[in-house]
Image (cartoon, rainbow, N blue to C red; front, side, top):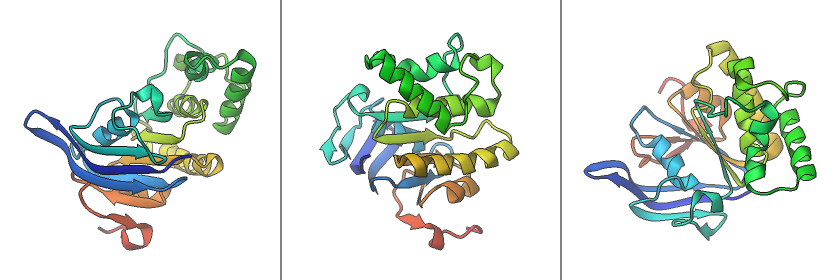
Length: 224
């Protein structure tokens, strides 16, 4: 697992400053929530950390390594979207195994890792189903398993529970927190839901271009 350091990170799209001068430190194994409304740069931050877009300025360090110009495939980062982004024509097993196939992991080792990932997210017995045969919660579990199966150093969660109803969302919050504790992966969650951030994270970082200090749970009141 790796620490994360953002040093003066900025991302500009012409005159629009999506992220501007951000400094952020996340320690190894920590679960940090970035909390804020739409348009405050949360998802852009994840894209920058994952290497899916490059910063206009600043440095990104993962585990002490400067990865600012490195492509996504060189960063060993898992990313889960709200939309799940599953392959509709593939079974659960094939969806979860996909990151291993592109990394040319030997078949026997891949099968072992897929089985372990499915066990972690409680999807044993559903291996041969396709996404259309799964509930929303089950699809999200598949997306989580796929993001963990290649043993990433960092896990990024882009409002992963936002499309689920309240009851299921609360159930999965408990499961997700336990999963992160079990695996120990350094995790950043972005969300606009204060209750979700409080429930899941070790620490909350507030918003609006992420230029304000981090708060811990003791200092972040539910009424604020």
